[in-house]
Length: 366
Ligand code: SF4
Ligand code: SF4
Figure 1 (tube, protein in one colour):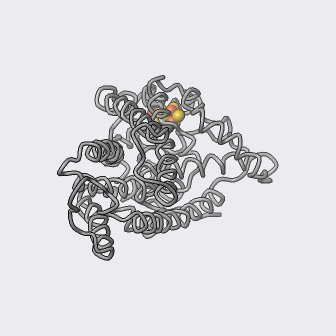
Figure 2 (cartoon, rainbow, N blue to C red):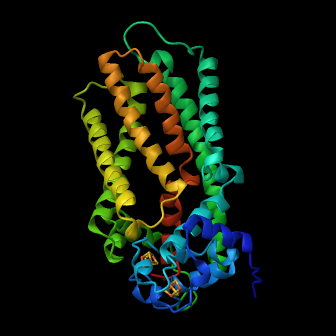
Figure 3 (cartoon, helix red, strand yellow):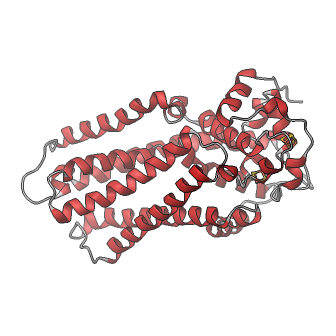
């Protein structure tokens, strides 16, 4: 039998991050009763609240159920002691990103405000070093042409390589997460794990339709905001991949009327709308979103700055602005923040939730 030790430091961290009065929980189970996503067998979040109250870190980190919660806030609304279970579960998820970050330093880097200057300095130094190696670290003369500042071959090779490195590190952490889920959460029914392959397609459908948002009683606007951001971000990645290909094979930059350029602008518009709804709800609808943490705001701010700087970079090229290259540099740092740091920030839920949902399906926990 697994030996689990209480960790009071972990409990204090959860209290600090969630703002919950964990000790007030009387284990009534109302939270599990109202949660429409909780399975009948070993429902959540009551058991997680008990574990959190005892500081049982080892049972919470790597617990698949923490990721089946879509933070609709129903459990917090019906908690008779105002313990805010949905905020506690969100704090556990945040601790999970930090726990599985490889190397651990990356988890700290993007979860504490004190580390923000270092988090910004790293991409700045790396980009300056690349530009210096390429021999283009200066403001080019004449009409704005970003490839004279950051040659495409250098940009594609270095940013692709760095992204690959960060995602290999993320896979290392996700592998440990998967092993911990296997260790902590027994398979239901016959005890035999089902094959993952066929489950992937149904999971994909669930992710694309965001069906769990409807199932967990979230406000319609919350689902809309997530879908706008999800599809806007996805479209932007497709357009970026096309732009990389175009920079190698065709005339680049793309004209304003190029279908991919139009798709990129449409994606930006979707992201602005999604972000606008999210920021509004976090500021004015705290009963649903609960306490917004530093990592919540870091995620929203970095996506906002990435999109805004991308729009400005495009305008600066067409308008031949004198600050075009400064904006471009800023945009590259924002790209690093959102894409390279993604697995270690709250954006990491894209990877962790998908992995956890896949595992849940593989053991028949749904
Ligand atoms: S968190 Fe609230 S609803 Fe859930 S068991 Fe504790 S007191 Fe009851
Ligand atoms: S926030 Fe919603 S989905 Fe998550 S545990 Fe509470 S009731 Fe369930």
